[in-house]
Image (cartoon, rainbow, N blue to C red; front, top):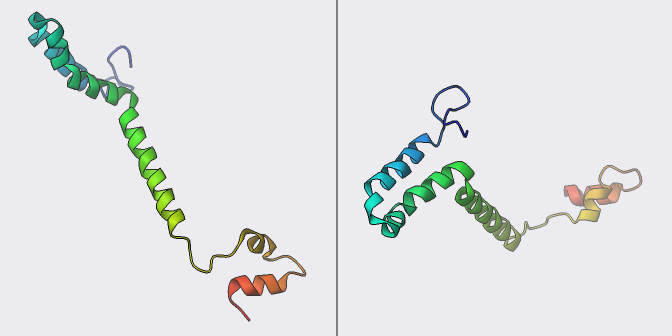
Length: 103
């Protein structure tokens, strides 16, 4: 939260990261532009704590890889969509038997 307090009155979840950023800026204040560059890793950690962009990107990549792996190894003997739609309908007992593996 913007106030620095969490939902339950304690410090916010990213308060420790913010303290690291402030500490880095205080230590490297005289260095000017190079001091800011030294503090970029701490600032990136703080932004990640706030927005979870890297974590979301990693999750999306893992899901895409899973979908790709799943698509490259289709199930053997998987019923087609039209066969599944016919299951349980009157007059389609032969389709149901074929999908269920009954003769």
